[in-house]
Image (cartoon, rainbow, N blue to C red; front, side, top):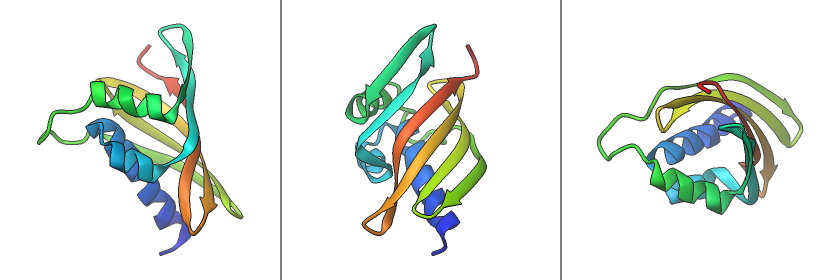
Length: 120
């Protein structure tokens, strides 16, 4: 599998895991020490990934519903690091996320997620 395919697979696990509130998929996508950072409703949110996963469970898409739309805007790879811009919908709102990934122990994992709330 080439780097872009592997990175896309990690991003897909993130987006689907977030939409479904699937802790297993989120654990596959994120490093356990990752953070989710951004402004929401005028306040700074800086969440450990375990807290982010809990928030996803609270706003999960009902079983059987399609995963909300998402699209990778760009992927930039430099050695064992990558930056991905992805637009996605979560809990009925649109976000643009900048994901920083690190290839470690043979797999790509998100180490930081910085989001821009587009439907504010």
